[in-house]
Length: 115
Length: 112
Image (tube, rainbow over all chains, first blue to last red):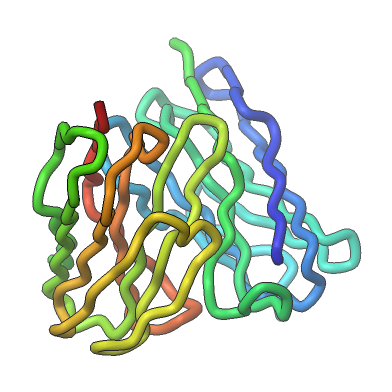
């Protein structure tokens, strides 16, 4: 089935700096790539997603880029703030292997924004 | 405001017990999902359902079963709980297959 690898597992940045989290996927037919943020004691919440017909998408301080040739996508957070501290998960869906109708998640990145 | 609720935040059970985890969504979503979350492993799909009385196996269905008798409710069943099923269990729902999934707060299950 689909395999999604996510790096780094932990990331510490200073407030105001940028943070980048990278994911790779194995099924070239995957066409939907969401990013979720999980705060302590809560379930994950969608923050941005991208579909395979675009290469980049932005929403205020958050952006996602997709390189279908290399099968990788990245989350970029600019001007980080303490409230950005959380666990971030990437995911992929729509592929042909192992059932294309479900999300396969990465292993998560613990982001810490230090004052 | 959309909402997914799970029956318990914390649950402690004994090995061999039958365990029911309940999930209810109030958004009239067709699709519902059960995941388990373990450190370093991310979220792994156990079972999902695209319609009432319909279910499909996810990546790790062994030791679990599910029930969806009504559109808004999706239950996860551990027929005979084992210690390796100690985990955080997350329920989610979505309107369409490739669309935003809304998650509940999770149930932390400990099997002694």
